[in-house]
Image 1 (tube, rainbow, N blue to C red):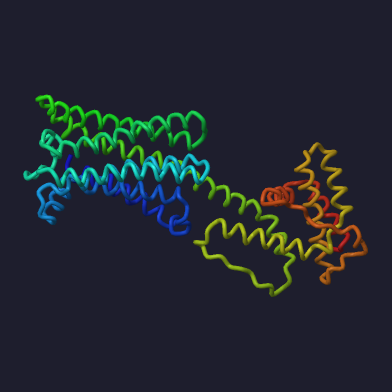
Image 2: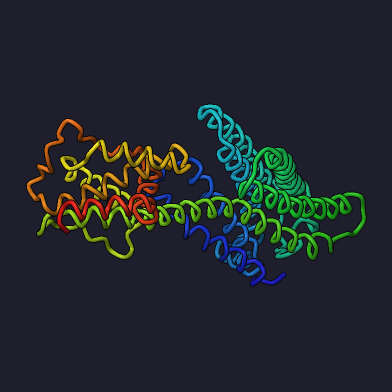
Length: 393
C-alpha cells in the first residue's frame, strides 16, 4: 500500500469527525458523543501516522530511525480502547457502571501503552523499516515484546467487540441492528489483520518467512476493517439524527393549517418572529407551537363547549376513534371560534361564558391531529360554514 491508501481512510475519518464536532460543542458532556469523536480522531491518527511517507517524515523530524513504530503501536492500542469504551457507552446502562467499566478498559490499555514505550526504550532498532518493522525486528530482544504487546491488545479488543456487537445485534432492531452487524463485519477484517500479522511474526520466531502476510496482506485488511467499523458506528447515529430531523420537519409542516388559522386571529400590528433559513427544525417547531398556543389564548373567550361536544358526538357516530373524535371536536370548536372572533374583536363572543373551555392538546401529536381535522374533516368544514353564516360573513 502507498501513502494514498492510508490517507484516504484518514480523510474519511476527518470528514466524519468534522460533522460531529458541532454536536460535541453543543453537548460536550455527553459521554457517547465524546466516545464517537475520540474513536474517529484516533482512527484518523492511526492511518495518518501509519502511512510510509508519514513514518519516514516522523523518523526524520525526531532523528530516531524507528520512532514511528512505538508511536503507531500506541495509537493502535488507544484506538482499540476507544472502540471498547464507545460500545459500552452506546449500549447504555447504569451511568456509574458504564464509567467504571470504561475506566477499567482505559486503565488496562494505558498499561499496555506504557509497556510499549518502556520496552522500545530498552531495545534497539537502528535500521529504519517503513513497511516491515514487525517481521524485521520479530526476534530482537525487547522489540519483539513491544510487537507482541500491541498485537495481543488489538486482538483482545477485536474479539471482545465482535462478541459484544453480535450478541447486542440479536436483541435490537432497525438502524442500530444494521450498524452492529456492520461493525461485526469490520472486526472480521480486523481479526484477519491480526491473524496475518501474528502468523508472519510467529513464522519469524520459528525460523520461517511469511513476511508477505505482514507487508502485503495485513495493511489492506486494517484499512477495510477500520472503514467498515467506523461506518457501523456512525451510520445508526447519523440515520437516527436524520430520522429525528425528518420527523420534526414533517410535524412542522403538518401544523401549518392550524398555525395559519391562529395567525388569522392575531391583532393588526402584532410583531411576528422571523426565522432565518438556517434556523434548526427544532427551533422552528417550538416557535410554531408557541404561536398556536398564543392563538388558543386569544380565542379562549370564544370557545364553546356545546359546539365541541356536538362535534365529538357526531364524529363518534361517524365511526371515528377516540383520539380522532377529540381532534375533530377541538378543530370544530377552533374553526367556529375563529369565525366568531372576526365579528367580536373585543373577545366577548356571546353569553355562553360558563360553557367556555380550553383546547386540551397534550403535545405536538394532538396539535397535528387538530390541524389535520381543520384541513380534511367534512364535519369541521360544515361547522365553519355554519359559524360564518351565523356571524354574517
